[in-house]
Image (cartoon, rainbow, N blue to C red; front, side, top):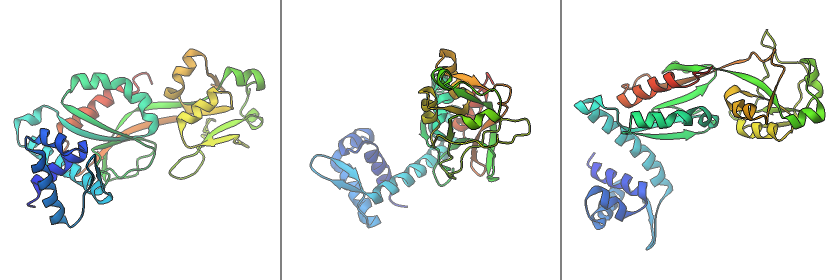
Length: 296
């Protein structure tokens, strides 16, 4: 299309919400940026920005167009990289979606990744929704559980396990269960999957079944909130070992029924199978597989 210059000017302005800042980046005047975007708006037949004397903000149409344009420019940069020797140096923007809990295992290794690959710009999206890798504009996603989308390539990042935990305060007030059957009389803090609304099963026994008569004194759809409630003494919780580790080490949590908590977990990284594995994505996948869950 004839509007590539307009798209570049639009994206830079949307990034900064300033014609002046965009003009500095593009090396042209703020007036020229404004005229280029106005021409793009006339061509598209929509208004992309709300303009006042003090600020510039995206319209709803502008926001949607911005998300698409970002993906287009990323694809163009990837195509340029493939056709140049610069492709040998991993660089560019890398969009990765992770579960909210992912910051617990990812953030500790990011400084080493940034030091090794300083020209890669990480754009991390933490949420617990099931996202479409392609339509969402992501280069990769990290998720746990079974892999069901056969159109995606994947690699396992490493295993972890679940543990039952309670606070010392809860243990002092209510005692701790000595058997699976004892859980029926305890306050249980349960996790509810945000995508399905179902409660997470506590797979504790050797055959992988859930203990009978497991109640719920509290349910929540965020693992960090669940951990906080358990540390506060609200009840017994079932959580990944990497989420509980720090609290266990400092004594704000203790494990419960260690002989029965055998439930395994698995995180994987997935990316579109029909996309060229660019250097920036290849080194990210290799680094995460090398660094994550090394203690598991």
